[in-house]
Length: 167
Image: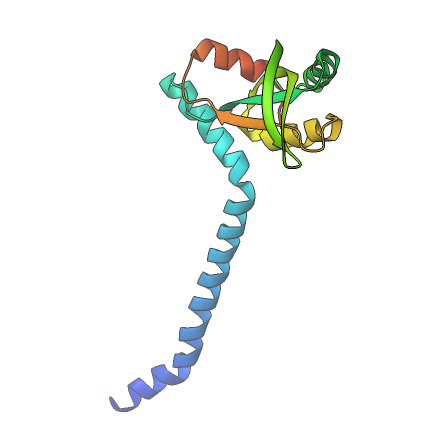
């Protein structure tokens, strides 16, 4: 009778059923968690940064950025700057007076005057801001350069958070 007991267990729980059910379910759960994590990453990152900043009172490097944008005229710079501010894509825009710029264009060295915009925003909005400026800018290839902010005044960063629209 003892010899039949292992056969009885084998018939109740066939080996191939046990080995295939758990890995399929585990793999499915893993894939669902992976997809959810990847799709929610921007939201989770923003939430973690805000919680970290609130708990520690410190700034997380790279959460805000500064953009440099050259414009051909002061009026163009004012139009782009005002439009950025009206859409609340930036907390602040500075318009610097004429600067002299030298650059290569179509095989020649050009020497011209330009107006420089200094734009402060969230790093998460940089690509949206770049696309927006490119659509408005009169140059074929506008100069738009972004730098993440490593550190600064926490009060200023808090003000920037209030001034810039949510994503």
